[in-house]
Image 1 (spheres, helix red, strand yellow):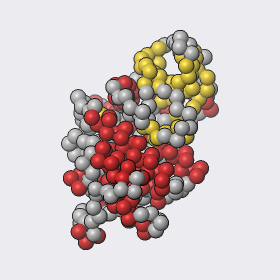
Image 2 (cartoon, rainbow, N blue to C red):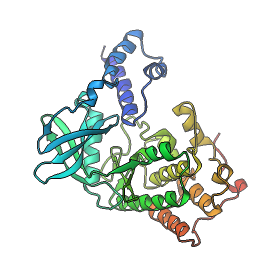
Image 3 (cartoon, rainbow, N blue to C red):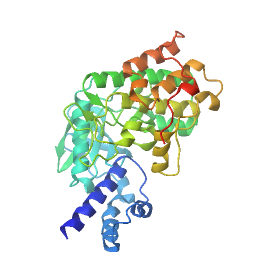
Image 4 (cartoon, rainbow, N blue to C red):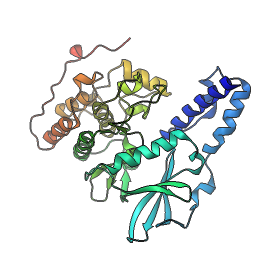
Length: 352
């Protein structure tokens, strides 16, 4: 019985991780990946998974006021939390109040992620990173009080204006985001989940990083005890996908930002697939299509910058986000870039 319970908990933890990454949950497909489960165990997991089903009730404000914060309207939701526009009564300012979903209150993984985000963002001070005003617990609800950034997320722009965005804007946003990552890395924080939905484009046209829920802190382990994958498949670096228990460094964020910019410029991520496993296989074994084969109007230097950021081997990538930012700045200012193009025959052979 103890062994059965341990097996169920391990699989449920995997399910929670998938939801926390913002991936849609197809329970039948998820359970098909675990043939080791008995019919009774599958039924127990299905019952527990009902907490993730969408509900009209979730659209309602759960409180009129939570401590010093008066909730005004629901802004959005992710796998772990729901974000509301709120007013801090004592200071009279608008902010984004992120509340942990009540059904996850007892989940250790969700609690660790929420705490990690608070710790990570609280120590970062950069115009390209969302500001955290406060973090705590009120009426049994964990919360993060964050800077309210009017505007759109990058994935919203890809849906409304895309699938490809104007290169000059994308390169400018890339430079701003690379500079923000360089600042975070200098303070010992690796984001680990850079992707379009975690980039906010403000009304001032500037790009900012949000959601540090998967951040790796200098004093924390990079992986779970099981060494499981953390991140979002389309934008994950090869070393994230391999998840062999070694710590990730700043170059994983360089790769993910490169993948994000690649999609904004070409209309598709570097690797696609019907399943996460298919995407992972591409990340580990194939080279991305050269951007200019998809969009011939892109410059050769821009293609070189993107492919340098997307090198499979960390040692061949930009050594830092700051170096990536410098080359993006060189593109904007029409100066020579530091990266050098690799001929296809000299590029690293795919893994077998």
